[in-house]
Length: 458
Image 1 (cartoon, rainbow, N blue to C red):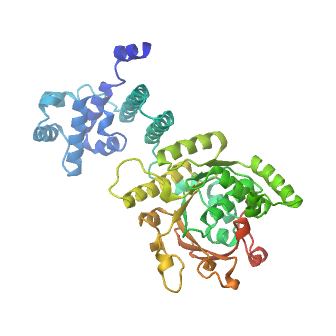
Image 2: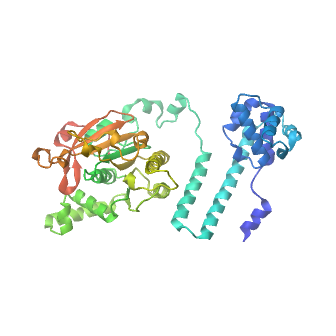
Image 3: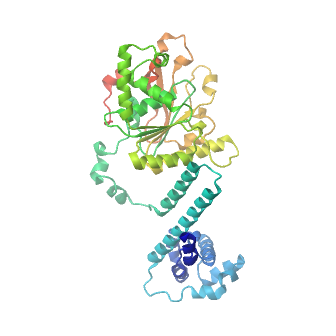
């Protein structure tokens, strides 16, 4: 077993001389502290004495006091740490031997690199320990390991504050593309023309909440959007996490909606020759489509994140759909369900930003719309179990079909509304749609097809 022997022989990666020179630079010129603190934390130092000294320097800086040998020694003394850090004599020795031309950036980079190597070792050791104990499922250990390594990678990638010039110069196509609306990066079309017109489509990094009461058609609309993105003129990969329905049921819905075949007749087996032909053609299209289904019950954020990163690396990723939020489980302990849902919605927003994809998350509403007299249209306050869903979301839309509340009204049959209740970067309002119950499919009204020019290509 060469690896443990090598670890014992070489010890943990560290460069204590670079650490000493960094602290010495600050003692000589305390204006350098912000530069160091912006790149290093106390945990990046290998020696415990250096970690304590750096922490005390930070406390002095936050109080607006000067950082020098005397003030740092006094601060260490107050915390009973001066002797454990080598006393005043060690503080005096920190700036000894400093080169004439300070190379602080290089010292910082060396210390950061060594700290990263140590963290990699600690992470790997934890994974080894969990594997040897064998108390967890291998997939859970693998997902956790991937998540830990991802965090390490993210900690090394820091984008600083940028000027408007730097933002524009970094924009694909430069200033001309930034100023030209026709060249701006467009969102992903949902297939619903008026909705796309109001929102510009679904944009990378956004958390989109699609909420409704049960039986309003949340899953149907989400699958309609998935079908449009994955089976349009420019097919793009779509991941669907279904926590409520089995993947076979999802596939059946997609198949019937694509073939425009009555789903009840399909399940019962009463199909004519033309319907069978359309189903066969639809099945061929579905098999070729970049759709990826996962029906893991109660999936948590870590497992979802690991699966999506693998999918993006192997096939690419344009859209993620989660059906639905309240069925997800949070890892860790929470005082109540509201805190758990808050953590989940925040985690999904961060995941959307990290993966740079739109995250379409379905959500249940509480019973308030059903109990409301007169107008049963949902409101933002009806979002179930958490106000933070509204806070984290970039866009909140509600599905409303009045025929559910007034089944005897023939004039309401098939009429649906997609209500944009919140949108960070655009207007709110109402989009009228048609709902074909037999196909569990939403469609654009004929008037929209005649009037609306799509703002972008699929």
